[in-house]
Image (cartoon, rainbow, N blue to C red):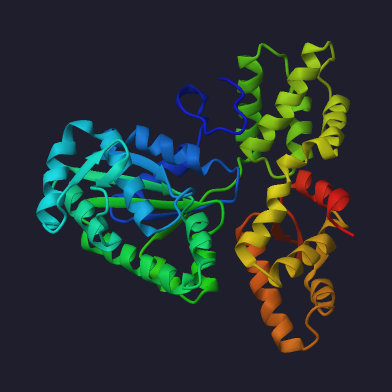
Length: 390
């Protein structure tokens, strides 16, 4: 097994997630899913794995991302492009269905670039999306469509003058689409920012209430140990159990991405002649906190701005800074007092604190242990304390 950092893992490089996959296939037999996972947990890799094994479960499948879509029509184009790539032999059949459902369009084809119209022609994205879904529904068998980075697209749309109304319309349309074609299509919707959080914040949580939540967390200790052992075997490195335990303890919340980062740095040091040891793990840990490696962590701060906006993002940063100062975290009372610097009145302060803690917990920043809110990821806590907290 290779060390893969940054890119989704596929094939022999994909590791475990067996219990999660079994549960998701059970759920997909009757429902569509909302894959809830913080960034770098491995949701994209898991969705691709599910698509790769979909045939064994009686599905045809493909995956796509809405991350780069500027508007609703672009999402429909991405969907059609992914279908054309997944089943090129069916393109003519789907194209005929599209033209039959949209007779007013003079020139319309389904190709490598998705739905293409003649120069100067326009079409309502709702009609094109419905036509495409009906086309898929007319095909043999059931389909699984995995869509990544849905919240990223929605947050971009929210920045428009009519953004909230467009987001509301898109999500209600998509929910209706899922319900109308439930017998033919199962969906997995995911993103590095919680779609449920975005919808709830804008009062449209019912647009995703047909999706069954499927949370995805870090590896447990036993799986993390096997993962590190497999990485070491792939690189022909002797990594003792105490060293593997030290890596897991240093990270705190063994997310595959950060396990691979520490292992990759250790591998480089071994190639330079160092001996794998617990002391070497601590040295590498400290090196990762230097400014040269801030790219591994800066997104955690940026996503608060993207997801929450002002002033909630600044308030969340302030709460996290309070939690970072002690490895055991901070009590709720301490956090309420800290938030009093921003919101003096008790009732609105408590309501805001409840909301922010819910977001920070669901997005993987914090967890409550023994009545205190602490960082899940020790590596992130140390970085936050050194580079963010005042």
